[in-house]
Amino acid sequence: MASSTQDLEQFVRDALGRGCSRPSIEKALGDAGWEPEQTRGAMAAYADVDFVVPVPRPRPYVSAREAFLYLVLFTTLYLTAYHLGSLLFELINRAFPDAASPYNNGVSRSIRWSVSSVVIAFPVFLLLSVKIGKELAQQPIKRLSAVRRWLTYLTLFVAAVVLICDLITLVDGLLGGDITTRFVLKVLVVAAIATVVFGYYLWDLRRDERAA
Amino acid sequence: MSPRRGIRWLSAGVSVVVLAAVLAGLSVLGSPMHQRALRLDTIRTSNLGQLAIGISGYWAAHKALPPTLESIDPSDSHHRDPVSGQPYGYGLVDATTYRLCAQFDTASEQESYRAGAFIPPNLGRWKHPQGMHCFVTDVRQAGAGIY
Image (cartoon, rainbow over all chains, first blue to last red; front, side, top):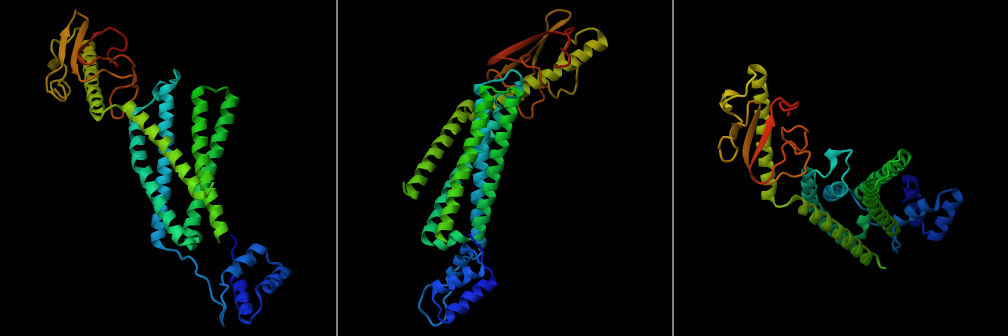
């Protein structure tokens, strides 16, 4: 997703106003040294409608309601992902008790809290995802919302960091000869959760960029 | 596969995993009544632990076991069952061995940590089945007064 500068849009507006054809404007910009993505972004700001003056296309605006929806969506996503991981960790601890750490063999207090969190946060997350999906289907311009994009990239960042730390833990375990079934299963759980979150939201962002 | 169907499959898969994990967690926890019984039993073993400390302190001072629980701590704060209010059972087996008894709601679980319990980590000392159970301790044993 490229950003267009004020000058660029002003230029396109003036050129369209004088009746220049779109391909000629694009060629002139390309010759001047602008990147094709930036050119496309500026051209897309004005609709291909026959009118005396160039007609601007609708743009997404920052809305507090949207910020609320996306914040709740990603908060419940983080809660679900973290507590699902924590729950699976405790179940793995129970299934493969380690004599070397007797206090880590499936703490029921932790299981209780994780189950409670997942039971509440996951359905809320699903409902919000469906709701937002419907809104996007009706008004695809909302895909370009800044709130949506920033929070999605933030989630990608968190998932990427989690994945990197997980791999570091794996290598560290390998070097330390710490490879038990318990350890490997835990590494796999973290990798699976982080990869699913990362993969889905990256795909979602690509869809946004194609729709732009 | 169209995007919508792909998303449907993904959410179905994730929901199945989440549901399986939640059910496994619930089966480990047992019913809420069971959890409450475990907590009450923890309070009971915690009380008995404090009584054991008091008994060892009495032994260190008097070189004899206390005749009744009141001799240790007149304030009576942890001499009674938290639910029924009955005093804990206390008796002498011989000059250096005593017995502490309580009525337990459920059998102890192989749990090394429960939030909020006074029980320090001495695994196995306070294992008990459901119902009335007595712990027989020799007061001269190392650690008898510690936990």
